[in-house]
Length: 344
Image (cartoon, rainbow, N blue to C red; front, side, top):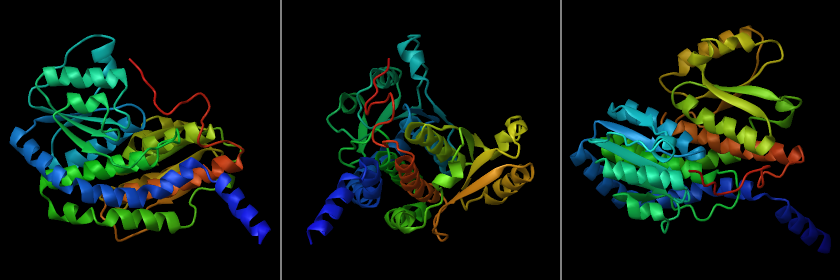
């Protein structure tokens, strides 16, 4: 009996915060979607009345990557031009953008980085409608914007964001669903917790042997798959110290494909949406040039295509955490990084 207790204690000690927090995502997001439903409906109605002609996202790191996902989502579902901000324009170059009739969505877990706060202040002065997706509801960002949609995922201690990134995508999905008033997307929100749970239970898709002796690799996706590819590439850098770059599979053929040889490693993000067939053909072309391809997929086939990228990410987070531990790295404390990075 004592030996069993020791084994349990060792298991707890050896479980990283990154793994624990990533595994929390289904429950946290289920709670988030329930708690935010009325708020999301109210904000969506305010947006429809404001009738924005364009949408600008503000964020750094994983939050910026969530903005890329949001760009595809909003342009596909609402047809409104969407772009990412360059915060340095506001803080370093001290220039004001003309943002009349613009919806500005600020994404930040902490809501405290000076450049993000300054960008939000300038957007408000320029006449934009500002919304914050933020985890810390007591942050100064909340006092600047017009409306707040909280992420509600609890404190995230691991430097590598997992549940906060997934919760950002679910929050923007909920907002866009009610903004667009598309019933299929509203109904699909209910799929998210189960889809993430299924991904957690699934077999690993990326293993240590796949990236042994790999110093550089490319992550390829198309559309919403490409949108989350930036986050995958960031985690490979942060957690496993592997240089990884993300490309649209279409863009990769416009030059970078010249790098492909028999030792080239590619992670293929396979999303079953409108881009599936075209992306699959492009991956096959690259494979025929000699690249070694690892397929990352959504596990659950009967899944709304806008939800599918979240399921791919959920499985990837657990795989990359396990690989980092196997490589003797601490996934909770990436070298040279801290949880809240404040830039100007």
